[in-house]
Image 1: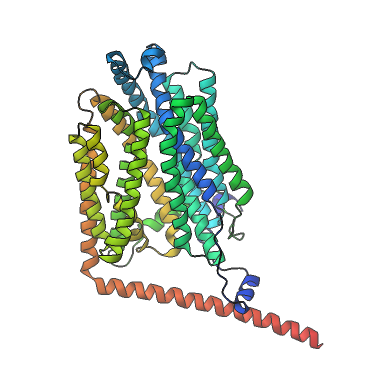
Image 2: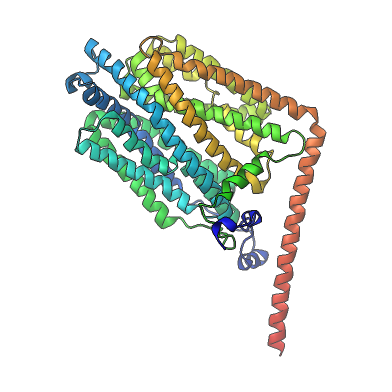
Length: 517
């Protein structure tokens, strides 16, 4: 059978969610075992996240120095001076060069990531193989850092060559988003197979990522100032290579579907995922899914714009260097972590606010904080702004649970794969537009790039309000539908367990018959 002749139903054969028969037999006669904590993917995620944050400001400095010295022909003394009128003129022109090239660079890189996610996401869902998706982005990161070290060792590349040499390898690896998606899919498989608590396990990994983010943000600028590029990027490469080696040696796929051998290049994979997204659903679930997809895409646009332009913005408007910016990132992430605790323990647990209301409050917090940043003129006030927007990340906390309530467990891989691809596709258009806007306005109104974010947050607010309205129209029917869905899932599980017990009884009787004979 050729790849193109595979029937669509073949793609629908989901990998088995049941444990092997032998393990089932053991579980029947064995008491419940409490699982001790052990490392799963924490070392790989910590290494990758710390590497990204260690090299973030150094990469931006490398871009700006290349544009200043190679493209604009300023001397290195002026480009690295940091103060003075000559440096300010060179800095403004360098940022215009980098921002203009980012228009095409971001588009090309994100298109590549979108295509890859459309295929590898559904393929991993059907095949149960998560390890290749963990290796791919880490390999792309290693190749990217090796390229940076080569360009530092053999200087002369212009800004276009530098930016594309950094973007292409990491885009072909699916970016860090693919690493996160594959990581939490693998954790879900492992928890299902071993009986571990999935919430606690994923929470441990998220905490490890948050800590790595703070440590990397603080350490990166300090290493750059004391050791330069050659003190930062070799350490970045070491962390990335260590994460890659850990995944290759320590990670084993736990639930591979060997009956459904579908090629990763099969064109029906993205088609089937799209059909799953747009199919008719009960009540207003399909509308809610589309609204939450819009909210998720909005969050991705705001985050990508922040990563792309924040360092240059703070450097130009407030004359920050990378050390101050690194401390600010660590401080803001710490405040954000506290805000997440407030959302989960106070707004959700004690006040029992619904997800939609938390989303509305989050959007209001973001708009107020961003408006304050536009009005800010001193560094002290900038450090107060994260406190003003302490729950502005709440949209990212409640968006996925709201989406998850509208879909079946067997649809999560397809829906989240489509969401990841749409995020990359949206960013492929939004990042160039943001870069173009910043390049045209940085010397006149450097705050202009923040205005679209306020408008987008307002649209997200209306999406949450509409979702809440739809949930209140027929709450009894929706609750009954959810109960019926849970009952069907329970009946299905009981049927599967009964079949397995029947098979065990047959095997036991067969053995007894042979022994008697």
